[in-house]
Amino acid sequence: AFFKALLFLGAGSVNHGTGTFDMRLMGGLRKTMPWTYITFLIASLSLAGIWPLAGFWSKDEIVASAIDKPVLFTLALITVFMTAFYMFRAIFMTFTGEYRGGAPSEHGAHSSHEHHGPHESPKVMVIPLVILAVLSVCSGWVNLTGGFGNFMGHGGGHGAAHSIVEGFFGVLTHPIPLIALLVAGLGILLAYAMYGAKWISNEAVGKAFKPLYTLLSRKYFMDELYEKVIVVRVLVNGIFAGLAVFDDRVVDGAVNGAASGTAAAGGAIRKVQTGQLQFYGMFIVLGLVAIAVCYYLFA
Image (cartoon, rainbow, N blue to C red; front, side):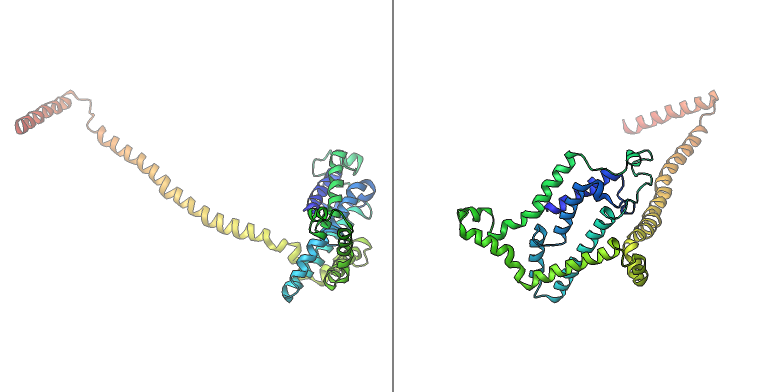
């Protein structure tokens, strides 16, 4: 988890120094942001599973546990390759080559990044990067003898030290870790060939694998699925249209019906309000007669 946290903080440091998250507007930052570059490189190597960094030991356990399941083992190796490739794609696009910035910053057209260019982050941001980088290097060594507690239980003696050395270097004598390292190295090499040395044109690769390139560049068509299917068809044409009908026929119908009923009742009552004294006198007499009849019948 240390190297993953380091990658997040490293991305934040790059954004602080450049004013953008767009790698196409970066390049050459290892010259102006050396601390961020070194720590981000360590985190990338660890995530790629390069020995002897912390990520190697956890990834080695995952790959080794899938050795009896060919499909899972193949998927694990593909994951190792892709992880190494995309992390070093970020490294080469961000920190090597020449700076490609100069466009308006995402933080505003008059950001200080435009006037002074990219710069290293302040110490309050760099120091946590360095601490996490150290932990990304050595935290995986803790379990070589079962943890620090086991090491201290041996009194820090020769047996524990020998066990650490044997576990540290002995893992390289097993084929599975070597295969994982080789696959990760191939991913790094491909990233260097495409984005570092530019031996391979990424445009040519995109044309050669156009369906896959389109799928990835369109982000698995998730935006289209969300906007055209979920938003337009489900929400707008479905739920919202139904709510509009309900509002028009039920809610508005109830409100308009109450208003119409009140108007009709008022119209009916208005007919007895003629303003003629004789008419009102007739109703008074009828009322008195009705009271007398009720008294006679029920008294």
